Image 1 (cartoon, rainbow, N blue to C red):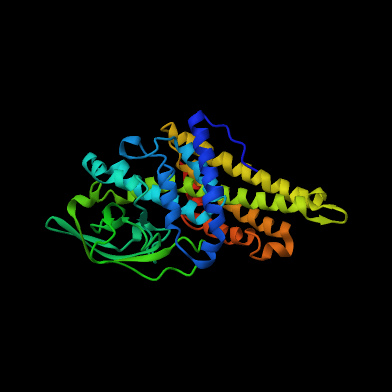
Image 2 (image 1 turned 45 degrees about the horizontal axis):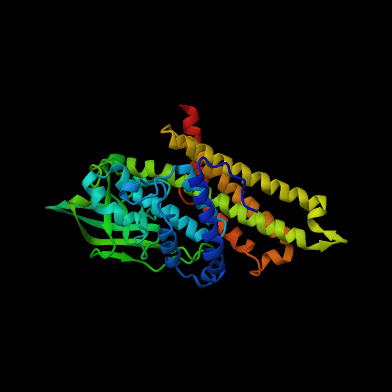
Amino acid sequence: MPASRHLPTPESADLIALAREIAAKELAPRAADAERAGAFPREAFATLGRAGLLTLPYPERYGGGDQPYEIYLQALEEIGAVWASVGVGVSVHALSCFPLFAYGTEEQRERWLPDLLSGDRLGAYCLSEAHAGSDPAAMRTKAVRDGDSYVLNGAKAWTTHGGEADFYTVMARTSDEGSRGISCFHVPAGTPGLEFDAPEDKMGLMGSTTATVRLVDARVPADHLVGAEGQGLAIALAGLDAGRLGIAAVATGLSQGALDTAVGYAREREAFGKAIIDHQGLAFVLADMDAAVETSRALYLSAARLKDAGRPYGREASIAKLVATDNAMRVTTDAVQVLGGAGYTRDFPVERFMREAKVMQIFEGTNQIQRLVISRHLAR
């Protein structure tokens, strides 16, 4: 059943209704087949772009939807409830646009953002490296100034949309000054020296291409530097707070989709002369699932409202990401259990939901890293 939402304006209610309608009519019928085939859903992003749902939290003057973050996240949740690969992709695209919007010059924003926010171009975010996932300050990818250009060399692992995106937001080392030696670059697809490994063969999110991005003497103009030299890690960490809320929203949607499937099955399946939802043992499992979904939603919305108010929200974003993704793992596992043997087959989506939930606990900072972030806030 649709989530119960308290939305601030009629316009925001219409946007969430539109997201739900597109998710149900355009995305849901294609999700299972595309995931089985490992087909990248580029047309799904184009559909969301045409509807104005791909870049809701950015200003209209640059081509965005000019919506509060809490509205964007609820639209993202509706997408994640039917197709997590697309939900994650929308979150990554928004994250890849963030440095340019928040730290770019006005000339850079006017030059690039309208195309990036139109829905015609899809972004990727290149931060992690094979040896430096949870510790981005240990990255080795280098950018060396050469006249009016920078020459980039290195490899970025686990890049969502790697080889599919139209532009790449790349963090690279411009000096040996540790965390102060990292800078941010806007690298268009098609840049000579920008290469891609074969996509990772993953447990889930098969429709979301994940690949290592290699930079081999990739030359980008000096005016593609976003922010100041040495500001890259601060840019990356600021973006990750918002990105964690995106993943929390997608994970909540995944949980809602699993709950809806389990409740629908439990109403129809009979055992011992009545619907299995009328047996207390199973009904209590469903009640706990529902409580977990509502908890996840409340947490990400609370953090988003702090962000919308211009207040610090890093701790709350980590809490939301931690709780929502742990809940998604539990709720999807319970959904498989509710369906029994049927839940272990591909006749129902819950087995896919369960596989997709696992990575939610890993990317945008593992849940162990979230606990570290939260505990450091407590120690201050």
